[in-house]
Structures are given as structure tokens and as C-alpha cells.
Amino acid sequence: MTPSTFDAQDTSARPTRLQRHAWHRKASKPVTYWMMTLVLVSLFHWRLPDYRWILIHIFTLGILTNSIMLWSQHFTEKFLHAPLAEHTRIWQLRRFWILNFGIIAVIAGQALKDIVTWHWWITCTGAFIVGASLTFHAYYIARQLLQAKRGQRYEASVLAYVCSAACLPIGALGGGLMSAELSSPWQERVLLAHLILNIGGFVGLASVGTLMLLFPAIWRTQAKIEHNCIVLALMMLGLIIATSGALIDEPTLLAAGIFLYIAGIIDATYNWYRCVITVLNNPRDRITFAAVSVAMAPLWLIGALGTLGVRALQADTIIDITLPTMALLIGFAGQLLIGVMSYLLPSNIGGGPQAVRTGMLIYDTAGLFRSTMLNVGLCIWLYTEHSLLRIVTSLLCLGSLAIFLVLTPIAVRNQLGVIRRQREARPVPDKPKWNQINAAIAILAFIIACAGGLHHNSRASSPALPTAAADKITTLEITARGTHFLPDEVQVPQGNELHVVLINDDTKAHDIRFENGVQSGRVLPGKRVEINAGIIENDQLAWCTIAGHRAQGMEMKIIATNAAEVTSANPTPTATTAETTAATPTTSTTIPSETIVITLPTPAPRR
Image (cartoon, rainbow, N blue to C red; front, side, top):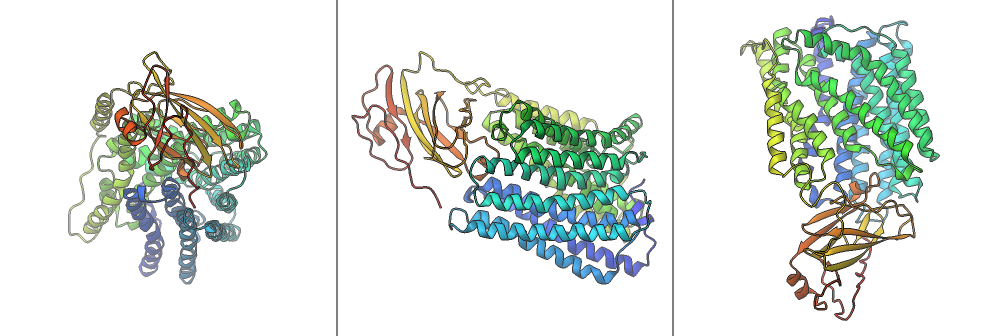
């Protein structure tokens, strides 16, 4: 299948085709606006409450949901050879307006979390609107499927779109419930079910349904269409079992569902990767950013879900499971979305083989370099605990995707120039630019070397232990309440050994993990635990590892400061061997000098 397939098969009259393209451009505008919003918000994220949650949901709800709703309708018409009447397009556009009103309400509700107590009503209302929009979308596609001629080649793909759209309303219901802050362990159970249904169900099913056609098209080769109904059945059964296991707190059942779902994906990818092998034997110009993206994204999905399944088998309860959120969002969903759009947008504009190829070549600018930065950089980002290295690799990963926004107007302008005979088509390279992979790996290796390796000196993978050099001990009492540590920023004299007493004054389970690898384990509501965080030599972060909590702002900053500065701010006894001092909160607090172990005052929870 060539890049011009969509144009070549479109035999409708020119005015009708232009009307369809006009509808498509209008329906795709929310995706562009949400992408721009994501970039802008990321530049000023520190000013927002729960910024990680907001960034994640701008991407998943704003960008992914609009894209899936648009392209699933587009491909349903293509697969069933049944384009809709033009008078129905205005109602489809109105459905997008309603959907985006709900998305804005969801994000606004969470942004107001620390300002008003009734914020969750706004979030729940938005979640209901989003769920209702996708429920109608599922019904709309199902009706088109039932009205179409039987026995068509890609019926299973359309059925996958129906099942995909049906998953999101249930996931949105879970999201609305979580905004009201359920008590533990229901908050953690619903969160896991929310992730499974939204990423595995909504995104996963739509992706597999689309790649049944697009994978061989993007790799420009042929593939057999086999076992599509079996693939869909395995994935749906796995989703039902995994979601049930999450909700009834049965990790073994959860793992069984996940592995059944993975079996369905592997069945689908078997023929896809035969396409890859075929192309590698004679690559020519076929190994592009889009091609590598659609090949790597399923591997990230399989790897992330496999990790989740193994963690489930090792866990006693659902709250003990750490979710591989970034691998799913960036490695799978983000990479797949940008890769597919890099192919679809030029194809949808059309204009003949040379024009389409020109647009695709623009999107493939530094393609193998970006793919390597994205995939290898993400591996480093997820593996290392080195804070600076995580920041640099995260910027490289996200930048490899965000450059899509810069390339889009350039690609459109060049492609339209070829169509209008205002410029020449771009020449086609005769072989892949393998040196881009070498350059990306060399840059990443240089960054790791500059950072002193994947582990930073004292912040090795093994937790720091007290040594004879730590002749001073600082004791700190922290309260976990809501999705915050109180206090959330403290000063500790550099070189002191830090002991932390964590008190869970909340209805949900929490824990704390320090940047040097020390971890408390789960602390149930009403319980307390003492942790030796080791010697504090540098500033570091500590956070709650329970899924979703850090994204909602559950972090604490530990500032390593000069002992003299701490003494001047808060007088303490003269330091002696094995002396115990108090950590200093960033807010001004008077601490009695005669106290040996001092408990910090607990600020009122933020509303």
C-alpha cells in the first residue's frame, strides 16, 4: 500500500471530497489546540496545583480522546466503504464541542482543588459529559457497522472501535469517583481499573484496530489479515478479568487478565513484525519516524503491561502495585499518536504520490535520531534515580514528540506547494540514515558521562546507610494527609543523618520514597513508621509512590544547608557526637533550644 492509497480510492466528486476534508480540518482543530495548551502549560507547570495530573489529562483527554474519536470515525467510513451524508457533519462537529466542554470541566475541577471544597462536582460533571460523548460515539459507530454490508475485510477493526469507545465511559466514571477522594483501598482499586480501561481499553483497542490496516501501510509492504476476531476477543476478555481483579483486590486475577490481554496483542503483532523483517531486507526509504514509532509503541505496551502483571503476582494487595504510567503514556500512547499522525496528515491532504511523499519527508526530519532519543532516552529516564539525568532525558524524549508541532505547518506548506506546482517535490533518499542512530546514542552516552553515570555518587541504587561520619542525627516528623506531605519543604544540615517519622493521618494508604533509594513501604491509615533516610549530602526529593499521588502533588523537598545557617534560623544545642537536632521547616518557626528531638508543627491542610 502506497501513501497515496487514500486519495486513489476516493472516487467521489471533487466538491464532496473537499467538503469532507473541510469537516476533517474543523474536527481536528481541538487536537492542535490541546497540543499547544500542553506545551504552554508545561512551560509554567510549577505555578499550577497538581500539575502532573493536569499535564497527564491534557494529553490523555485533550489530545488522545479527540484524536481517537476523529480517526475512528474516519476509518469506520473507509473500512465499511460507507461515507456519511454531508448534512450529518455539523452534528459530528457539535459532538466534538460537547466532548471538549466536558474535558475543560474535568481539568478545571482539578485545577480548583486547593481553592474550593466543591471542586469534585465540577470534575464529576465533566467526567459525565466525556463519558456520555463516548457512549454516543460507540452507538454511532455500531449503527454504521450494523447498516453496512456483511463480510467486509476490516469489520473487526470497526468492532474494536465500538469496544474502545465503550471502555472510556466506565473509566470516566472511575475518574469522577476518585475526584471525590474515596477511602483506601477503594481509591487505589478504582485508580488501577481507571488506568486499565482507559489505556488498555480505550487507547489499546482503538490502536490495534487501526494498525490492522496502517501498520503494513506505513511500512509500505503487504501483510496477511489473520485472527483479528481472536485478537479482539482475547483483549476484551483480558480487560474484563483485569478490571475485575483490580476492583475486588485480587492481584492474581489482575495478572491473569493482563497476560491474556498481552496474548491478544502478541497475536496481532506477529504479522506486523513480519512486515518489519521484510522491509529490513530491502529498506530503501521505508524506515521512517512513523514506521519506527508504530513498531516500538506495541513493544512498550507489552513491556509495561508485562511489568504490571509481574508486580501483581508479587503483590499481596492492589495498593502494593506501582503502575508503569510513563511507559504507557509516552512509550506507547504518545509515540504511537505522533507516528501515526505523521503518516495520516499528508495522506489525508493528498495531491498525488509526489505531494504526499514531500509531506511525509518533512515529518521524517531527523526521524531515526528522534526515534532513538525517544526510545533509548525513555529507558534511561525510567531507570535512573539521578534527578538531573531524569530531567535532561525527559526533555529529550518529550522534545522528540513536541517537534511535531513545528514540522506540521512546514509539511503542509511544502505539500500544498507541490500540489499547486509552486515548488519541486523533495527527492526520495535511497537508503535509511543509520548515522542518525549513532549520533543519538553518542549524545545520550555523553550526557550520562557528564552526569557521572546512571547513579549519582551517594545516590546509588542501594539505600544510603548510616556511617561513622554521621555524628549528627536530624529527626523529622511528617504527616501524610490528602495528597500532600506536611511540611512539604524542610532544611537539613548537610552531612546529618536524617530520621523520618511518617504518620498517615488520612483515609488512604501512603508511603514515601527518597531520591537516594530509601523507601518506607506502604503505611496504612492511622499508622506511623520510622525511616532512616541516610546521610543528607545534597538537596533531594521525596515522594509517595502510590499511583497517582505524586501526580497530585505529594512531594517533599529536602534542602541540604550549611549547619551555621540552620543554627542562626533555629537555635539548637551545641553539636556533639551522636547529637540529635531538628529539621528546619521553610516557614519561620521558633524551636525551643532545650528540646533534643523536635516535632515540626503541622500546617493546616491546603484547600
